[in-house]
Length: 115
Image (tube, rainbow, N blue to C red; front, side, top):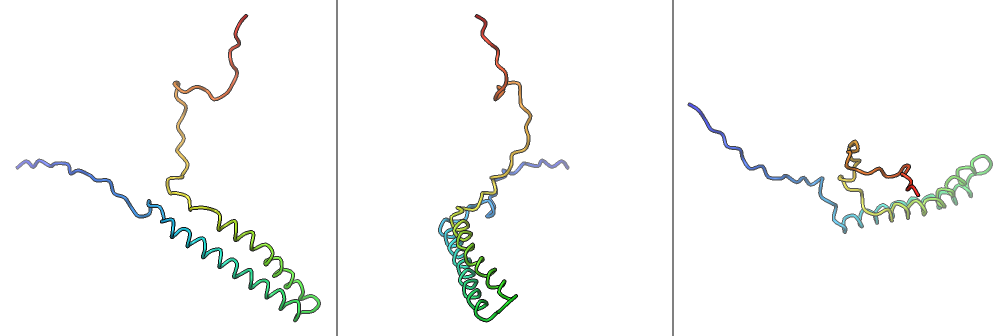
């Protein structure tokens, strides 16, 4: 008995990993990241004051490190918050394709016009 198989129509399947994150969710994510970074900055500032008051002599370097963290973290928080949306999964490098003969070279020597 001979069976005849028909090909089924294959529909395109979209996965959720290919979808963009909603803008409201992306903004909320960046706001949370900014607030966490600024909370760490406030903690560094309070620790620098605490270390400066309580530690003497060789322990003061902890106060200096915490103060440097309190000064640098706002810049880092703003850079991450204003970084924009996360890159798409389609923003990958294209595979190498050799030049075809129909493509013109981008630059190089040109023939001179005879006079």
